[in-house]
Picture 1 (spheres, helix red, strand yellow):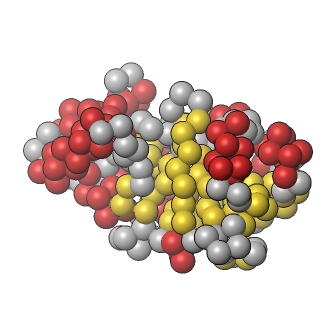
Picture 2 (picture 1 turned 180 degrees about the vertical axis):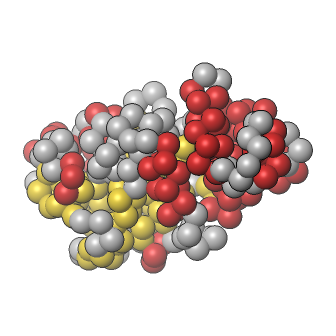
Length: 253
């Protein structure tokens, strides 16, 4: 199986997971239908499922047209069943779900929205994180709390180090600028930024990122670092307070 990155809208990423032999495919978070249809038609793919990580329009905007055209099934989380358009299959937290293409694990990661999930496909070492974890960043908190988002990110930190992170947006450059503004002495971050800039110069996606790199470079996954806490004026070991301050700073960066 392979994963095709599809650029949508202004800065969204959708993903087509496909089997090269039987050409069956699944799309994750179709922001809009047209770019997905183009890829499907060019490659003669057969769309079976749509996975939505959460209900925001820029992640479900293509559901209706794709379902009408390909008679596929829409898959989402039980808490979002009334907010994801055209939903057919409802999944639960910690559920393993198997279809014709792959087996995946579902994890509820609230914070950005109350019904946000990630999708992990072990066979591909792939984790689809929607708008919770970005390359060198994390999502804004719209329906949750700082504590919920911190706990959700902590869950993601436990996946294997070689896990590839497929997130919902191309925000990496601005995220890297923010990380560097706080963590300027982090040599691994500086090296990572050099790689990112090369991709951008060559008009290539900065996605997927690797979890090991995120743990070393993404400041939102490093709020338990005492040096970062001191720099932010937090006098006791309080990673949630540190995370909250980082998120507030990023919102106004």
